Image (cartoon, rainbow, N blue to C red):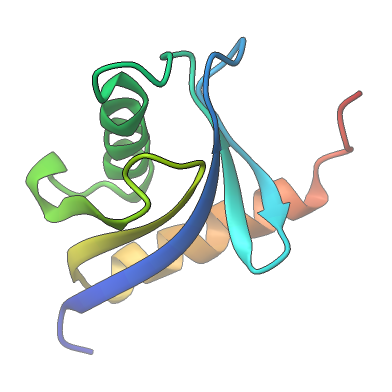
Length: 101
């Protein structure tokens, strides 16, 4: 499969204790980031988290919708089959985790 853009719906919880991919949230992926939602810091943390988790360059990850809100659409450019497999593995892993309280 050729590399194409991958779009992800995400929900961000800023000022969290940890920066992590937490769970699925309806039709989106819930992320927690330590950074506050000030001066784009939380958005940068989201980009860094997704780039690291999917093993793609940061320049390939950009927020295309919702830059000032908690609900966002993120595009991962050049997402090849290996990147998509990593995403599926991450989602399977968070689905198996016990909900935190």
